[in-house]
Length: 124
View 1 (tube, rainbow, N blue to C red):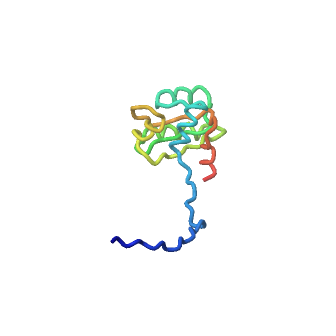
View 2 (view 1 turned 90 degrees about the vertical axis):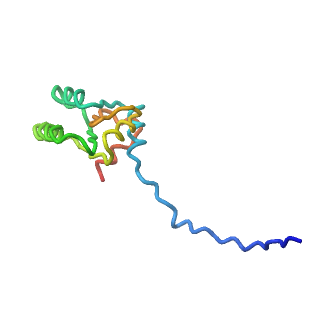
C-alpha cells in the first residue's frame, strides 16, 4: 500500500518583500504613440525643430550617430526653453520596436504625452 503524505503547515508569505513596480519606458512609448502625438525619425524631427519648438521631450537611442546628438545640442543651446533629451538604453532597433515599427528609429520627438507617464522621466 502507498503511504499518504502528511500535510505540512503552510507558512505565511512575507508581503514586505513584494517587488516594486518599475517604470517601463517601452510601454509608455507605446501609450504615447497611440494616445498622444509623436514624431519619429531624424529628418522629420530636425525639420520641425528648425521651424518651431513643438517638443516637450526628445528620446534618443543608444547608438544614435554623434553628429545628430551634436546638432541637437546645438539647437538646444540656441533655444530659450531647453528640451529634455532622454538617452534610451536600447539600440535603434529596440526603439523602433517600442513604437511598434519593424525598422530602426534613432530619435523620437514627443509633442503630446497623451496618457503615458513619460513626463516622469524628467524628474529622475
